[in-house]
Amino acid sequence: MTRTARLLILGTGGLGALVAALLALTVFIVLIAVRAQPGTPSFASAQPSGVALADIPAEYLQLYRAAGQRYGIDWAVLAGIGKVETDHGRSPAPGVHSGVNSYGCCAGPMQFSIIGAGGGTWGTYGVDGDHDGRKDVYDPADAIPAAANYLRASGAPGDYRRALFAYNHSAAYGIEVLRWADRYRAAAQAVTGPTGGGSVQVPFAGRWLARVPGTAVECDARIVRDVQYLLRAFGLTATSCFSRSGVHAVAGEHPLGLALDAVPQDGDWDRALAAARAFGWSPSCGASGCAGVVSGPFRVVLYNGYPGHGDPAHAGANAHIHFSWQHAPAQPFTPAAWVEAMS
Image 1: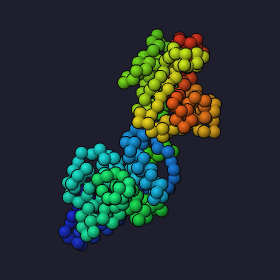
Image 2 (image 1 turned 30 degrees about the vertical axis):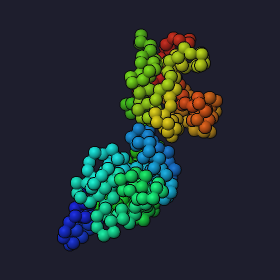
Image 3 (image 1 turned 60 degrees about the horizontal axis):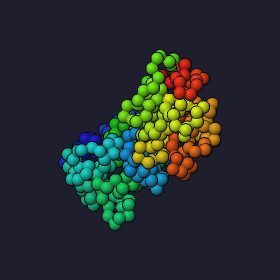
Image 4 (image 1 turned 180 degrees about the vertical axis):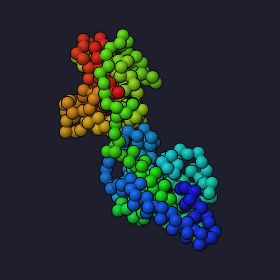
């Protein structure tokens, strides 16, 4: 919670607290009037964006989504709260894992008030989310669904602005949470590559294969930056790029160093799904690798529906996602005259 909210809690003058609250509410209404605040999101089963998958710990992401479904709340708003309050429990500040914060009022990854009559907001809205027989404000399995419970009781999903203002009496807080929520939803995440542009043809300039930093794979040097972006943005681990192995088709892109096979770094296949969708893949064209549908620089994205590719439910032990880059015609094990790469 912000300093404004905690001063309201800790303030000793009833009239001063009332005036401060009215001023904060006035500012909040003015910001809404001038459209300074993002639109109120509606509850939907939006997939996590690349930003979400890269930034939110897998355990927390699962809890946000489960709590959202249970309480009919947009999971991304819950994630926005978790980000602003404690960076999804990663903050080393007092009160996150034990004790109370520096203002002496709040605790846990979602920063519930634990002071006052009845144990503060935690006493009112705390839940036993993991059904272990106790309500622990420091346990994200309890704190995250409790936050969803609090938002629901405060007006969400009908009015997230009102609910967030109840959660923390600060207009700026509500704006920041909703901005993070927008970034965490896949539908709101525009994937534009390392430098924000589209794609360009890159001619061969004398250097063919290069190691992708931090991995054990080699790719055509012209796509190394693209591969780094995919791995970082979506939380993937590269398993193959250039290959002379008979496992990969000789007429495909692996012998050119222009194909990436990858798996989620933590076993969360939502990461691979988000990566596929970000570039235009969908189940309706999955059987063809969405050739002609996926956006540049890719020729195909092979995932669920394409034989031998996809998550474990579709591809078993061979589960992986595959990206192929567009390129000039080339013989196997030789560099293409040009390659399409992210600009």
